[in-house]
Length: 201
Image (cartoon, rainbow, N blue to C red; front, side, top):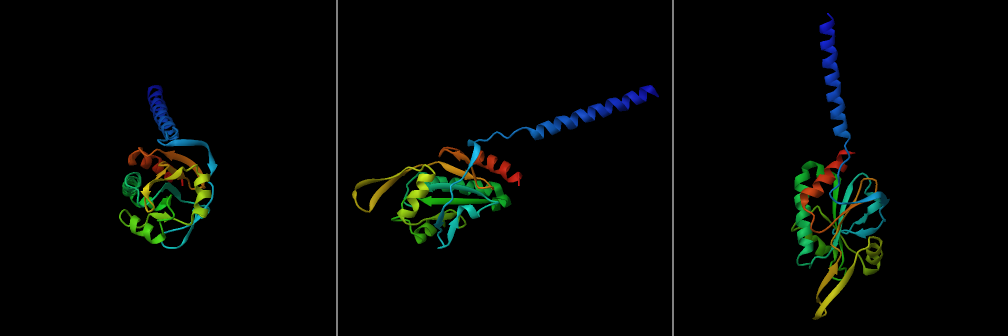
């Protein structure tokens, strides 16, 4: 009888150990792949026109993550590559992508009208959000997010490149500026962070 009792006690202790181990694994903190802003700071609010002529206000996006990058439609490399990466991220997230806004804010308001933004984004995903406005509206947004923007003219008034910050900014569901990603960051790494944050809600 005593042997049987000890056997059941041993089994119980083993089971308890397994449960505690599993619990510790679940509690293990997530290792973010992007550059973590710790503690998170409230993201600076802004309101700009999207490609459909509607106002997009960041503070009204509570409950959704916003992935934001700053670029322009005539960009020869960084911007189309970033949007292609956004497409990969959205495909990887599948139905969970509903919880994410994919946002491009122009750094070339003189050329990037709402119609131009719509045409450009349709090459990647028409549900991506393209934001534009006057230079007077955009300069404060660039400044709030530490975005560098400068024309690189080559002698023709209409033929120029725009040097700009290439990082991607992640604003979480509470409107906090949580992470940034360098241009070189691969889609899988960003999906890893997004999946973790989406599971928290």
